[in-house]
Length: 200
Image (tube, rainbow, N blue to C red; front, side):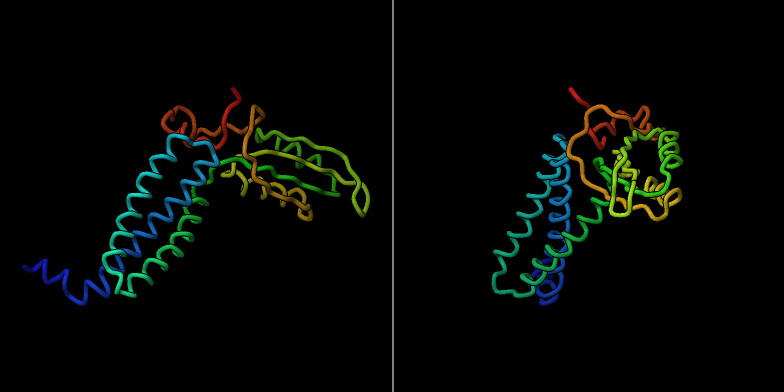
């Protein structure tokens, strides 16, 4: 009887139910954002698992909406959960740091110290000479795991503080030179999370 009175109470109708719908939407939209990233990274085993739970939670949330069409609080909670879920999903994606990126550095200063330092850190580096608006320049290209971007940018700012650089998404990488971190050695389970795929 106590449970029945709770489900029929105004507290459940106007506060608890909308809150549950809000949280369900936050979770399923966050999972949707992560799933899309997994698909774009080629993580074909993880994406379906995340998609299964994403749609299951969504069905639970929409089911409650359909049962409470006369409750405007549920609509607000549903929309609010969708908005918050996008934000949370983006934050999670940033923490996962999946994939690889191309860092392009354009500098007028002597770039040799930066190039040599990147090589000493086991990053693959390609450099070419060019001409800019103000004269001769050096263009440096390096492809790095996304989790290494902050570290590489710090190198750029240390050796060439006024350098212009851009960071671009790379969808596929075959071969190349990448730093090997101890945290990846021997962890075969984490192969699913590797940020790039090897060539066939």
